[in-house]
Figure (cartoon, rainbow, N blue to C red):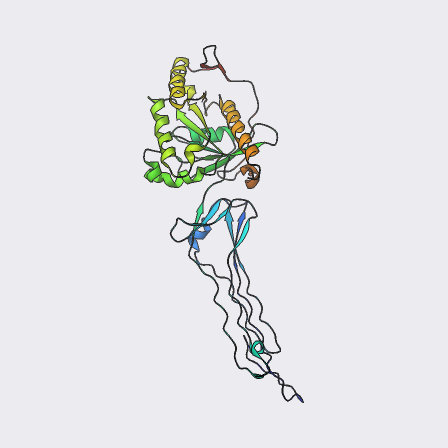
Length: 363
């Protein structure tokens, strides 16, 4: 605040006229749809809003300091210094919070004038603003999450049903960062698929940085569990990943799950039948055979995912769909693009005994 007195000609006792100081700026955090990484905050960690201006004579109050606006991707969590306490969770585009408020301006001496103290010389400093050290953690928002062992064909499946172009190779841990893609069964109904790096035994404890990747599928409505059909024991492959999901403290074990036997283009019809039976016995539900390389069976798996997602949206309509939160991806955007899967005829069918048989199988 300002300590000032009115001094004008022919005004003998002008009295105090010191104005108050202006408020400091706030730190505002907003979720926007056109960001998908927090990389900018790796190179700049300090953000400070502008301080308020000093008060002045003639009872002029100082100007308020400018706010600092921080833009983050949808799905960003603001964590306390302990990395455990969630202070804020931004899950929708346009969601905006005033995270830290600026301090109030100090009073000028005109604030303290009374009938008994007509010439106060007291002017206060402003109140200090809020400050904090926080961690920003991004959890992808997707309708369906792809899980499975390394090299199970998750990235190939994502590339087959969307226009996303993740790195694909014939060795484990090709995917090092989560990828997103938008798939559609036709019409306006779209879903966002999240492909996370492969999980290994001990992932829930951090093995292979698995605990970091599992956090990305906490927000998914349904999981698509891909099992490598060329593995010797498909039931054991399923059990390993399922154990990690159940051991992770994030509610993943309660999410609906669609199980699919991948890489069926490399199997004979007899092998497909045998492994489907073993896998269905292990998971206790229908298993969908498919091939991400040839595209055979992908429509059936997507249809099953759509069924679970529609049911989840109907049960909780207030939660926005991930596709609408992200918007339509643009071609050429790494890891996020949209595509349409045509509703063609069935590539796989059930036999009279309940087994699946492909129309075109490599012998």
